[in-house]
Length: 231
Length: 114
Ligand SMILES: Nc1nc2c(ncn2[C@@H]2O[C@H](COP(=O)(O)OP(=O)(O)O)[C@@H](O)[C@H]2O)c(=O)[nH]1
Ligand SMILES: [Mg+2]
Ligand SMILES: [Zn+2]
Image 1 (cartoon, each protein chain N blue to C red):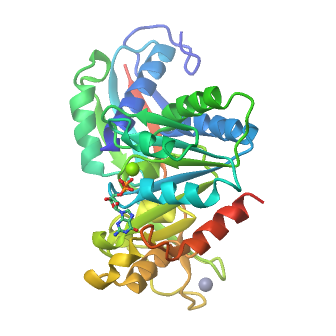
Image 2 (image 1 turned 30 degrees about the vertical axis):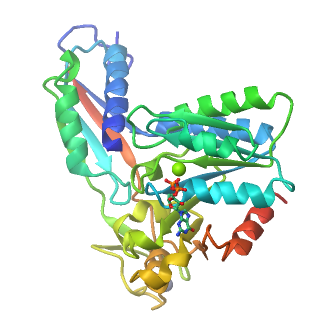
């Protein structure tokens, strides 16, 4: 019955050393996603921030600036509604809305569905950049690898500079840290230096950018970063 | 919040293990939760208590959580040090660039079943 101890008697006490990550199934599926994404020709970016930090707005402005240069696709993650996908669709790029129905993060399985739905829209067409807007949440999405090439964590000026210290996982696991809504700096007691210092302490390799989607300030380094990914 | 989905994944894995070993009841689950795993241990325990009680297999299961020590590695000399919190400087070369060394795992170590 049992290969380990060869016992057949019910009620036998088994001690099984498993030593397997609880995320093993997710991570295996994420690696498949990565293969899919690469077959599409794309570099994928997993965008993580609290609700309202400006993820969808950043994507809208990025599409406006880069749509002529690159083929862009978007996967939107939310707990409910198609609203963010509608905003992206209005910019004329292929987009899939994933709704988690309550879950506070995207996982590799749901993202897998999203990639297939996107492939259905694309037909034979390829992509250069695939943005995955995660569910608005600075905590939970950080645990789930989706198959992305790059992870971008964002906090907006009104949220306050203590977020890297309070939510370390997202900063430890990301390659890029964006401070958004810098047009609001005059109205908030937000020290970018303090936020950057805490973030770098957690992850010295983190690339840091500050920008405003409203004024376009700081967008050049963001766009340069995206261009470098597509080379 | 994501602790709940992780508990659900754990319960699925326990069901597979029990089937494999012909067991009807899980008595103990030992789990390693890294200090950088992003898991709130109380939420995980609470999720386990609630969800495990709904299933015959895990109704009497005890969850034991092992927390490995925090370790930081110096980016310059590679020295790894075990500490309570992020040190200001490397104890070997005094430089300040230190990164977490592992500690982000969420690992099912051992299961006891009858
Ligand atoms: N002042 C200012 N507001 C912004 C900026 N970017 C986004 N917003 C506003 O922030 C709110 C939330 O933006 P949204 O993109 O929906 O955030 P998401 O929930 O992270 O996708 C909206 O009212 C945006 O107009 C910015 O750079 N500056
Ligand atoms: Mg949004
Ligand atoms: Zn050192």
